Amino acid sequence: MEPIRHVLIAVSLLFMVVVVGTVGFWYLEAQQELSLFEALYLTVATVTTVGYGDIVPETLAGRIFTVGLIISGVGVALYVLVEIMESVLEGRLSEAFGLVRQKRSVAKMKKHLIICGGGRTGQVIVEEFRKEGLKFVVVECEAEVVKELRRQEVPVVEGDATRGEVLREAGVERASGLVSTLPSDCSNLLLAITARDLNKSLDIVARASSEEAAKRLCSVGVKKVVLLEEIGGRRLAKSLTKPAVVDFLESATKTGETSLECLKVEHGAKLAGKRVGELRLKERGGGRATILAIIRGEKIILNVGAENEIREGDTLVVIGSRASLEEFEELE
Image 1 (cartoon, rainbow, N blue to C red):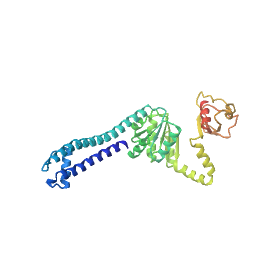
Image 2: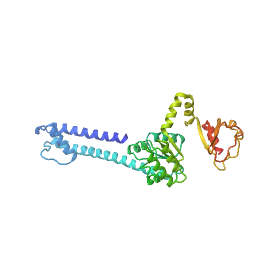
Image 3: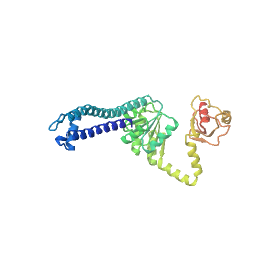
Image 4: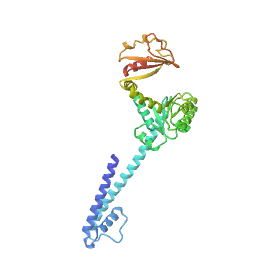
């Protein structure tokens, strides 16, 4: 807003000079019986320094006024030109430097996440990743969407996400995960194939519109396929028949004071080989954390008790306060 304000001030000053010059010539050169338009013409010719033609100041007072008008008017006109040029260049240079900084930032990212598609679904994912404090970049081809994302200071790469060079610019070879939210199943399939070819260990999650499309995506190495319409339909049904359960899950999965997390027990983790009772979760400071389930391969262990053993490769579903979850993660 500051550059615009400067331009408006400069244009207002120029307008005042033109008005004063027009009225001044019309009054001082009364003997020529100038019309207001002729006085305006004389003023513009003076301020722009293009030289006089058939109308020139003839009186001494008119010539003295002309000297003052040239000095002030030309100065103001140059000021207007400089402000306009500065505003244009400043905006373009700022945008250019912003893009350079963003490209450098993306080039330095490692173990980050890539969101392919910045539409409505992509925006929701952006909000969730931001709440989690995760490093990510969005790949989007629509210019207006890209502009809005940059306005929100979201790292974005402009281009077709199904093209290898665009994914490389987003750092796909160094990324740990990719979410594909493109509108068509064909695009999501092509994207998955391209991304898998560039990074064999990349975790890929994609949306699909049908079971058949989901099967094809899984066949090319997509880790998880989400049928948005199916999930939306189930959510609507449960919201009507079991609203309390939906409210609980909504609250638990939000990143807030209390949240639901999945923690992977990596090789060499302190948790590996211990029983749940040995962790003394209820005695630890920072609030309580509770293990709701242990996911071991295709098996899900519910009703987790003190005697259940935690093994390497397990995924623990834990609920608790942020402080207790952070302390729990330190045990990994």
